[in-house]
Image 1 (cartoon, rainbow, N blue to C red):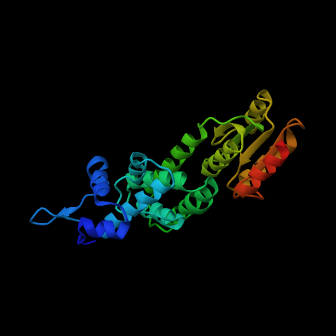
Image 2 (image 1 turned 60 degrees about the horizontal axis):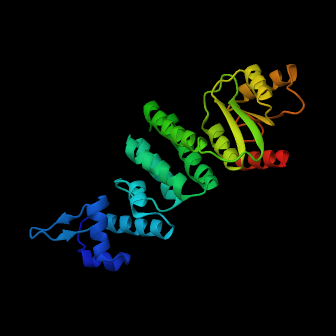
Amino acid sequence: MPASLNISALTQRTGVPSDTIRKWEQRYGVLHPERTPGGQRRYSERDVARVEWLKERLHEGYRIGEAAALLGDSETVARTADELRDGIVAATASSDAAALRLLVDQSLALTSLDESFLVVLAPALAVIGERWACGEVNVAQEHLASSIVRAALLTLLSDPRPDLRGTAVLACAPGEGHEIGLLMLAVLLRSDGWQVAYLGADTPYADAVRLAEDLDARALCFSATSRESAAALDNELTAAPPLDSLLVCVGGRGAETSDLRDAVSRLHAHAA
């Protein structure tokens, strides 16, 4: 993008005073204008997008330091959920870990959890998986994206919330290693007032049931991404059913339901 705008033109385009733009540039490093031979600043369309993005965050109540940190220094500026999703896919394909972290953080900070999970992160990871299957993304790149999303979700899960519903134990079915969907459910339940005991990947059925009973949990949720693991889990449930007081849910692509909103609603109703 050619840098052809002087600071007066940038102010005119964005409605942000030139003194404020200079302060943002000098104090927070959010703009890197080019210089003419005479030392005059020249700004690009990317700079326009960055200033407008910051202006939107300030209207939402962010402090400029917080907004500048969330914006970071990536080449693209995502302003919609679709742009965030596409940006995550593009950053994965280019192995840009810094951009990936920024885009995931922006998704979680600037959209609701529902929109972040269902419109941005889950679809982005699905596209990345499809591109891996076609050879357009390699295993390391796919793992990079998954690990960054996983780390962000674990951070959200550690956010303290009041216990309004009781305890829910969440585990991947035996042999299951894919846990992003289960982590999303854990975060949504946490925001709904549940205490969540998150056990993660490949959890033996009997161990998960024993822990749930020890914690006097109200719900035990298993994730199964294949029909085989869901069927094996059903067999274990039939052979060694848990206490009647413990609600057991099985979800994921291998089960009958993978709708996160529906799962949260059902558990909410159960706890009411």
